[in-house]
Image (cartoon, rainbow, N blue to C red; front, side, top):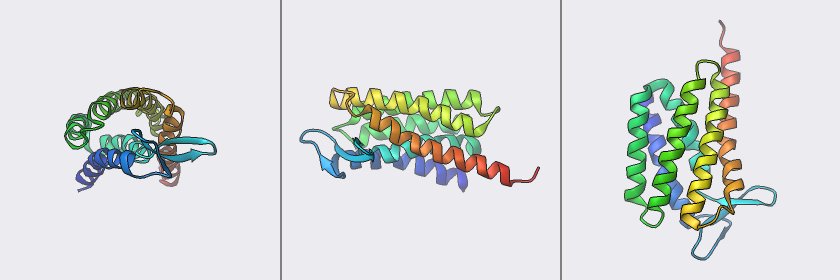
Amino acid sequence: MKRTLLATAFLACIPAANYLISNVGTVCVPAGPCLIPVFPGVMAPSGVLLIGAALALRDALQEVAGRRIVLGCIVAGAVLSLGLSPALAAASAAAFLLSELLDFAVYDRLRARSLPWAVLASGLAGALADSLLFSALAFGSVKWAPGLVLAKLYASAAFAAWLAVRRRSIPT
């Protein structure tokens, strides 16, 4: 049940993020993304809110479902992205696939040492890869990459903090 819920939430992030980018924001750039403020003076395409969540959900899914299920969901997510968002399809699928595989590799190597640090490090790796590649492919510029990275790190930092607090509250 928990595994199915996490996998569904992870996969739902992709089409929902693509919808937000094209339709929801405080300002929408003609022939470009809809933007939201992520820090004073820093804007990012609105879909970033859900992509940051996807990075954290992927880590949580790996903990309850294992590597094979996560890799299957990553591939399914890339295919889903191609099928549901024709305007952003190639950029979204390529960025999703690369960033999630990078997040997976970093998280998998660090998780035995420290789950909170693994979440932060893999979130940073995934956020950088996703932000730079998606921006370059979708918009022909990395202009919004700093805001994208920052917003995605919010989700990773929140999940890492929750893990750290949760681990301290569990008696050993």
